[in-house]
Length: 154
Image (cartoon, one colour):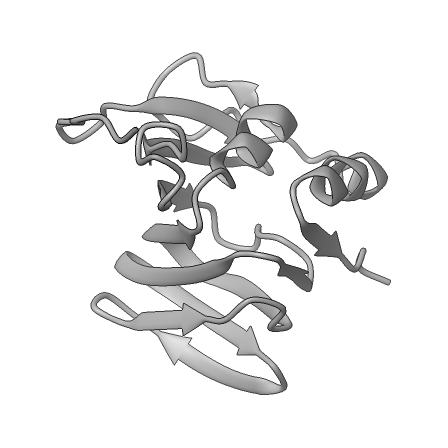
């Protein structure tokens, strides 16, 4: 059953992952598994490798710039840009300028991936910058449990 949720700017359960801040605005559980809504604050040069997932994803760019690689197309995106990415679509958001996006996953539950793969954020800020490359094998293993298929970078 869906719950009423009311969050202000900076509120929500947040995780640090891949040098970014991922905040759950609406969990799948809270929405009755209709959707999961995430706000993501991403650093320039950081972001996921090419991947697909078994949920649809809609992305709205709030601030900054992305270069979206979608099923062989490349689209530059700034504030106000919107993408709907159907289930199984090859995608890779390339962060070309620090940005904030709002991502909606349908059906709900994909927020559990971020909770499992990330670490609880100590503050509602970007994490201290790590120069260590992400552990793609670990991310891929966790991703499989949540319907995410990751193609590690070469």
